[in-house]
Length: 434
Image (spheres, rainbow, N blue to C red):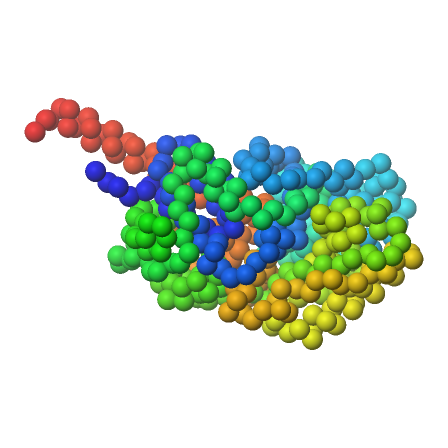
């Protein structure tokens, strides 16, 4: 009897959970290895990351399974608000059409954004029109395409429509939970997925260009055997856990160019901040790159006066405390200038400024340079599928969902072929008993 799992998924922070459940529903035997504890210090807020859950109509059916970790989700009734230097801009709600018409004279652009609720990319004709516009007229779409795009690319170089974050879709703000990973594990067990929690990855068992098993240290240490494998760790993450594994799996090592970094602020004075949405994006200069202090994602915390502020910083400055201190000053100035009679203080600096790289582990929400991310193929192992930031189109959940659905389709085809072979074999044995 073959004791190998049909699929082994190697995961961190809940990645691949949706895929594991869907594979199990087809009848496949699925093992899910959780290596979260191997990846260094990380707060629950950092697990959740800067992006709310945009829920376009084309992904609602999948969202029900994807968001089944028992976390608390808060509907943001007005949808996404983008606060520019001159005024806030809503993408949904009664005043959205008026804002777009009065400020930009571009009410049609709002219609294009709304269409992204039903389709993940813009129509080619619309795309070409947007790219050809002056920078002051297409900034919303540059913003749209660079906010969660996995690679950093100039808007003028985007010759074909790309996957877009559906800014006009309904959104939910997920509150962080220290039990998030445990909840994911428990839900997978309920789906009859074999969950294995490991505190150390020891080796990858290779046979030629095929992966036979994953050797781990856990309550039941040993080699987890499988017929197919899904790796949910980037080359940067795998290098931190098992450096020799990178050379075995990936054709190249890619370090990100930008990382999302979290500061916690407190409004020490005034009440105006209480009118802030629970989730808002702040842009200072539409003509500049949407990085550093020019683009801040602000979200509420479990305390009314405290907010998390996320900024996209160069990876090269990731552990530079002086750089973080200067960024903290700019965050305070930005918020105080926008919210009257407020006094803002940074009450928690990024974890990156308090720990060294050996304690931190890799950042979870990153962007790569286009030159790095275009390298292909990234693995030469034939029974290994990759579902991690380097191969997603977007950092948000929509990017991982798209990749996982592709893997699901491929493995389902493999499974049907295996079942057909098994049926033919059993039929042959019945006709020709030994």
